[in-house]
Length: 75
Image (cartoon, rainbow, N blue to C red; front, side, top):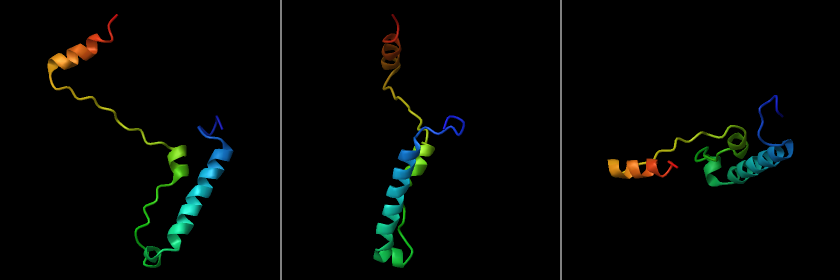
């Protein structure tokens, strides 16, 4: 797993794949599936294997708020 850079175990990957397949099977029995539309299910396995990095931003109303926040890290 270390060489493949996997962060989940084989068991977790298998369970995620089963959940993905079950979601697809449930969707395939709907009227939307018969018309080939609205399948937007995100893959749990894909999310576990390659989590998206989300940018985190902090917004401050004023320069004073920013300065106060930065001073909170000073010792």
